[in-house]
Length: 426
Image (cartoon, rainbow, N blue to C red):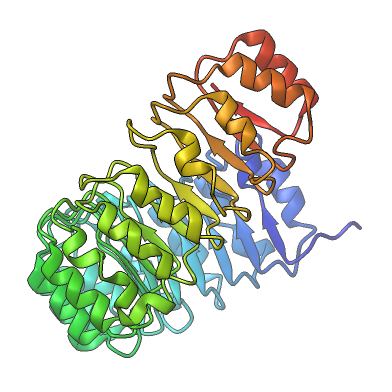
């Protein structure tokens, strides 16, 4: 009998996975430990509730966006004594009654994803999940009715090192204060994007109480300002990822000092789009030796070709760059001296001065590029660009995705025919 490995991922085949063919596959994987069925909506609740009968050794199970029901979840968890990771994001049929199933796996469950399970989390979630005393990673993205009071027991009793609360807009600074008081030794990743009630006071508590934090996402938190950013940059010495997208009150006053902050040597990802930063911050980025990802699109501070030219000259470490060229900047002035030889992802969308010739001239320097996004660049002749790429495979030889508007159908067809691995978005 043919046997498959310890991991099976059917997410890419979600449209054709049924009870029958999935049962056939699972019958040939008796030692399966990792099963991913994200988006497999044709699987019935009755089948999902019996997965443990064929795969009793599962330690990781992904049922995101499935038809799982409360009864099926209860049967499933009772039959999986070693389950350590469970993903239930977007399971719309789950209700608060499903929370009663979790204490069964209290001794083993370390990762739980309940993002967008709004009906399920609109309940005494804190009391139930607090019984999961081994829980290290918890995702509650989009559970917008979650309150400080419901979250507090979880924070106090679970050794969380990863906590994602994006979109939980009922939360206040109280949650951050409790986190700083109880999770100083464990928490490393905190996502509070879109939690509009958070202020500098809460983030200053994070800076004081969570010095080991490695990733912080405050995307879309309008009350966050330079005051708390200064505190974070100074106190969180191991910070690797900082996301301040849309934080208009975070400006060069705090971020221009990032190169002198204790975290300068560890910062890998910096996302600034929509913040109040500008040239002052960009000019300081050359002193970040480990920076791999920079998102500086639509910064509301004054961004000129001089600031971008600093990034172009000094950052041979960049792998992922998202930026729009200023209207007054010629592409050559910014891109001509670029040292982005290791760049894999480049988004230059909405660059009004960029044309296809400038892009093609850079092809030799960007031969490692895998993704190139050029949406809303009015001077780019998409047909000509696609024709050149179709005719010469040496241009961007590793390119897997190209986004460019207004490409004629015949040019697009030739490009996809000559480069079958290339995904073209028009």
